[in-house]
Image 1 (spheres, rainbow, N blue to C red):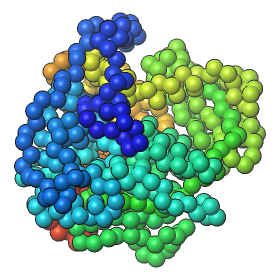
Image 2: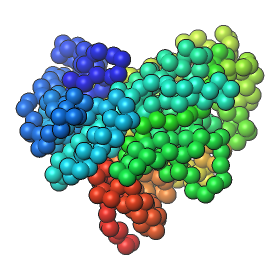
Image 3: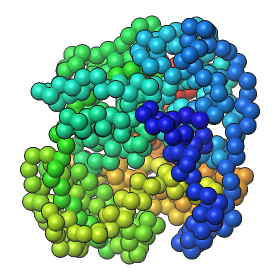
Length: 535
């Protein structure tokens, strides 16, 4: 059924996490009562996930020399058919695996990955690089129309290969998941400090390929900020950048690989900057009667030069949705941490910009006990599991995010909320659209939106696609980016094509054609051969 390296528990074939963690039908019935009471909608009788039936027979077979590295097991192929977006979870939940990969390869070394890639390309197959399978934008889904598909899962390549204690850097294989690499680094008193919501399953290579963002709000927000160099194998040879703290030598080869989403090669390892593990922490929750006052406080904090680890502003509706508040106040989750010095003074300095808000008396290293931040954080960590429950109970639950400069933020959030709420009302009848600011920079921020609405069983995909299209149109029309840290994949391609300059698209296509002459790697993602639409 598929496992995470180092963990023998089978993973779900359709949703988030491990098969044994799926609630029973009785537990779901109990959840349904509470869900309807809290949301005002949702089914009381849960639907059970479909079992994996017999999939389409594989259209090619691995040669004998690679057979031990490859699987055609139906559960393994089903597990690798989708990422973990709402759309993916619904299809997997219903057992709709019409286009699974034909073969899933699991190399244990770069040499084995090269051998699999050479065979797959030579066989005329589309090749899908696969890390933790946590894509929420269709980034690992086999493309329609391919004569055959080989998914290359790098999860067995999960070791910290080398640590430079002097430079505070580590060379890590691309398939290392968050917990696996953190456990190895912790033995040296170190941490990568990259903690996305998908931390339990996301791999280092997947993070680099998608330019993933962690949950820290300032300074080191994206995986880009940690990378020293990247190594990848391509159909025409190995691509490796020189390990340096910085360089002005032309266009950076590792920066091109970051965000390439598997279209330029299989990332096999990277040198990344690591940190001493923090031992000093301080945090609090600030409550604002007006969202606008919270925005001004956040902007003032980040423009002052302070760099809080968390500076997340949650609107009042989301606070109520996540049980962190009663819906009357926006919440600012504010936290600092350090490996070297006390941070209470930094927290107190940040609070001088929050005069329009209220917070509890600070204690225990600057942190009020039992804060609303703890409640919100608990819901945040459990959100992917909760979405699986929502699917079973007939509730749409999905997110989208963007980024915008401070001067445009008020207009941007208002227009995106209006367009998305209107789409939810039109398509679903009722529901909520909430907003939070997840990452903050001196010049702008990343608004992150959550949609929760009643689903019509059997029509969930059509409902969500209509809402998603309206939201994405609004994001682009208002001047934002189609994604701040969720990547492009296949789902965001129509809006990514509108966002990027055409001349850049031609340059990217030329680079793709050079390293992947047959366009085998993740076709349909980022770029298509010779397809540029004049606008």
